[in-house]
Length: 342
Image (cartoon, rainbow, N blue to C red):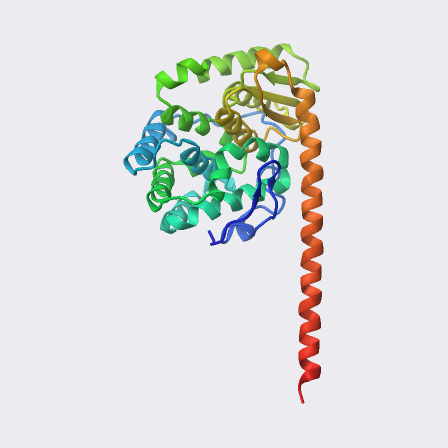
């Protein structure tokens, strides 16, 4: 976790790619957490340990940390902290790194959190700029100036999430194991009172019902080239269940098309984060749109994905050009200095 704030382009994600948090590049899998040693499917699976991550307690812990810490009325900041921890690029077998990484992050001062959010976002933006654009409502606050109390409350949320085992839940190299729980749903649920969720029509499908529906659908549909569309996606719980069912049948979610659509910007942003955490693959799109008014926006989402990728390519090409120019100037400066010496 280093100092300095990367600039974020409000439309297409980070306009400059800063270095990753301290130690992250050295420890992360060389090809990225979503693809390194990623099992295509699973024929036999270990039972999920329901006691390993307690969703309601997690939700209560982060909400208490935010409100009691004087964080204020905004929920995007604590949600962004949870998203950053879930997206942390280091993924290992059995999430064995989680205790050491949690201790390292906890030791960092609160003032470093805005830069860390930007750095983790930039790491993923290079790989999936379209999903990170949808996730911006949870992350763009890191570019703003905040009171010390707000930043302190953000750190309190991070510490509470770490104590509640978020890295153990989302730090597995195997995407099946890190997809057993929807941490973004629990975070959003904890930070929004039921009286606020009801007018929005936010009613989460219980996980066991989602699992049953997903298994019924995957059992009846052909194995090749499925399209999974969820047009009132929330944070993507049904997509998670479908991906898990596919993996249990030995299938690879990367071979299928996924489209999640959600009206609420924070929930849509959470779904975009989940698409990365759950490794839904290159065929996954997430868009924030009113399905009742606009209908299925999958085609528009595909266009946006291509546009975001082109923008990313231009930014990276410019960054490489600038780096080469600066290197040449430093080289010329050294040579000039040597010739000037008597």
